[in-house]
Length: 227
Image (cartoon, rainbow, N blue to C red):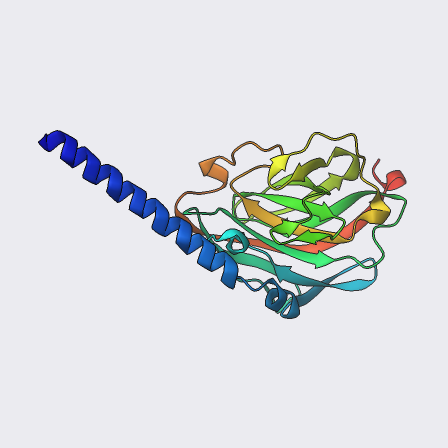
C-alpha cells in the first residue's frame, strides 16, 4: 500500500509540475509583444542599397524563455547575441524586411560573419505572419550556417539549395523559391537544423547558454558571379 501511495504522490507531483510549466508558457506567450519588438528594430547593414532593420523573434512567442539582445556594433556590424533556454523552448532569431524582394537574377546570398562555433540558420520568407511567427501557409526557406569560434568566415547561400520549413519542421512541397517574393531575411539559432533534425549539443548547447554571431555584410549574388 505504501508503494502505491508513494507512486500516486509522485505521479501527482509530476502532473502538477507539468500544469505549472504549461500555464507559465501560456502566460509568457500572451505577454510576448511582437509589435514592440518590431517598433524597436535595430537599423544596421546595407543590402541592395537599403539599410536593414532587425527585430527579434524568440521562442517567447510560444511561451519559451530564450532572449535575443541584438545591436549595431561601433564598426557597423550586426551583433546577434543572447541566451537560449531549452526549458519550454529553444530558439532565438532576428529578422529584417526586404523592400521589393530580391532581384530576379539573384542566385545566392553572400554572408560574411564571425561565429562562436554554433550552427545557425539563414532564413528567407515572404514576410507573411501568423500568431506564432511566419505564416502557417507559406514556408520559410532555410540553410544551415556553421560557424567556427572566433573565426571570420564567408558563406555563399545558394537560393536553389534552400530547404522549405513550416513551423520548425521540414515541409514536403513542390514549391520553388521565387526571389521576387522574398520579403524577409533572418538568422536563427535553433535546436533544429534546416532539415528538421536536431542541432547537436556540440553545435547548439544544452540547458541555458549564451550565443553570439556577428554579421559583417550581406550581398546578393547573380548566377554569373558564382563561378
